[in-house]
Length: 226
Ligand code: SF4
Image: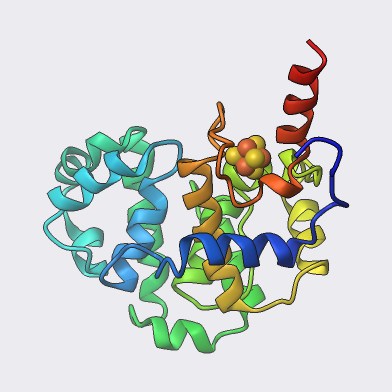
């Protein structure tokens, strides 16, 4: 491995290698669009295992149920996801917003995507990452999702992303075909890779990106010089 550092890998190649290694991820892990949207709010600043407990505790994901359920009951159900006061408010706001589309994702999908995205971003508790998860996995619109896994993996591949979300997103979208199916799969693959290999303390042995990874190769080189 030493001495054969490759040129920077292309963004499409990262996608190809991850897809080859892990296969299709079939995201989002939910049985309905409503469950997907609830999950996207609950997963903010917490692990998915905590969200799963909240999803199990909820009696229904239907928009009318979320809108009408007692605030205290909603909080009780989603407590495991943390920040439950704020998340309960966000869920109610989200489902009130959805009502203007008759709680029908097919109607929402026909609306201008920029309008939909800005409506989501106006809701308290929904930032770019959460909004773009909904844009991709519920509304089927191509917005590349930037999250901590993406930043860490790209940085280690010597493609540091701008700290500004929109600039980081624009950079990737300028260097990758804009395709909702690719964005859907790519985000899921990056999460998978960030959990399986590229954790804070990475497991680089047998990593599918190792050949192109500056971080890994610089570690090997520094060990070789000891
Ligand atoms: S080689 Fe290591 S640091 Fe590089 S992408 Fe793979 S797991 Fe991450």
